[in-house]
Image (cartoon, helix red, strand yellow):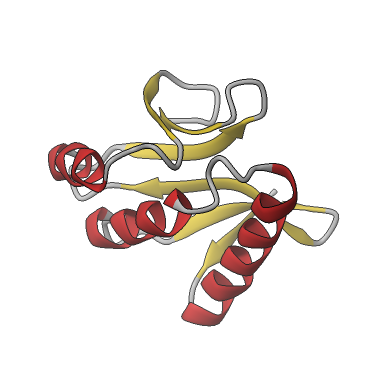
Length: 114
């Protein structure tokens, strides 16, 4: 099930959970998360951002629609230790993978095309 991010308080709750989990289990992505969320806010269309909800808690998967009209999903790949941007669904075609070594200009350039 997915929960719509309809206000800043829900987005903050989501980010707090993601940041907390990344500190314990995914320190390879704990720094790039905020840049990715900023890029989503920059390039999302009018449709709401959605996040996976599991047992009443917000989980790590996030869906959004770009101004270009395409749907994207972020998910954390535990084996690769990267956040993946996938087209259409969290199992869709891989667009790009990110970790703390990803340069901010790479994110700007990619999101500028979405």
